[in-house]
Structure formats: C-alpha cells, structure tokens
Length: 283
Image (cartoon, rainbow, N blue to C red; front, side):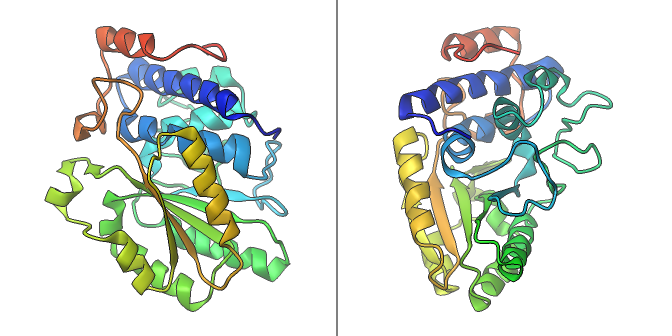
C-alpha cells in the first residue's frame, strides 16, 4: 500500500466512520461505539504502517499480519479491508445479512480476504498472535504481527496466560494494542471490573509498554505505532495502550457505553452522517 499523508489518512477515517454507521443502521444490528473509537488506529495500521498484500494468502508469509481479538468491532475492520482493496467496497452493503461473508463477528468459514481467524469469543486473539509471531521466527520471516484487544477483554484469564507466555518466550516481533476507552457493554470498566493500572500489570509480566495518549488523533496514532515498532526485536513483547473515546466522531455517541451494541435510527443516522464528510464515496 502506498503511504498517505496525515490529511489523506483523516479523509479515509471520515469515510470509514460513514461506512460503520451505514452498515450498522441498515440491519439495525452491530457495534458502532468502539468501531468509531478505533477508526484512527485501523486507518493508520492499514494505510500507513503495515506491510501487507491485499491479494491475500492465508499463511501471510513475508508480510505483516493483523488479528482482531475483540471481534464485535467488525464494522471498522470490514470497512478498512474493503477500502484497502481486499474485497469490493460494494460488499459492505451485505453486512450481517444471511449468507454474507461479512458476519457480525469475523469468521473463516466465509473465506473473506483479510480474515485469518474467527474472533468474537473474547480473550483468544493474543494467544493466536503469539503463535503467528513464533511461526514467523521459525520461518525466518522478519515481518511483524499486530493484535488489537479491548480493555474490557482484559477480564479474560486467557489474556494473562498469554501475556506471561509471550514474555517468557521473548516474543518480540509482535505489537499488541489495547483499545483503552474505559467502556464495556454494561458500563464503565472502573465500575464493572476495575482495570486499575494496565501499564504496571503488563510491565510486571515482562512487557515493554507505551501509551498513545490521544488515540483519536491521527498523527499521534501513527507516531505511537512507529514508536512501538522501534521497540520490537529487543527481547520483550510490546504493548501499545491506545487511549480512545468510544463513539468518537459523532457528538451524541462519544464517551458512553450506550452505543456499544446499539444501531442508530434514521434520524440519528442522518445527524451522524452530517458530522462526517463523504470523502471516498459511499458504497
């Protein structure tokens, strides 16, 4: 993929947000909140940072790989995959419909280009990414593995088994990111299950940890990913704490768990789209 300027990346992000809202609205089902909050991350990853091939080969040799652990935010991933050429943008109109390749949680049964594992059962993505990273080392493949997790997902025990394993085996060709929006399906994480200090926890497990303080500022997100990349290959797994706002980009959705899994109605969709310029053309 040809790299884009910050302004071009922001234009892509605006269109991706429109895609997310329209996809969820058309079937009145899906998860817009965290999808909107992670739009800068996905845009920067696929259009600036990752070395990837949209002709798509499942084994992913000699290219960077990405795994989505919190699979319910599939709308943002599907949009970015289509906009970067993995499948036709027009296919976004089939989201969550019967016999669609774009199911609510990504899966491999549908053979959708860009998707290498089924995700949605929270807590599993980090383990998969570690395995892929170790396979790359065995193959002499110097490319990186990326994985995104939710912050509510950190309540899963498998995450911490994987975190311990990654440090023990010096899995230093992987960058894990946590979407730190402080919200989960039932409310703020501090009320549901307080995460307290994730940096201290991961560092105590033997990880190198960085903070991207403004995960909804494109320049900051790109710089954070570049910093994380510079820390790979040093004997420790790398974690990027990405501080975002759920629902970012739409004033009535921002900062609340209420839009975790709720679709906008017709009036709300019109209001939201009015806040987001159409830059690449709606599907």
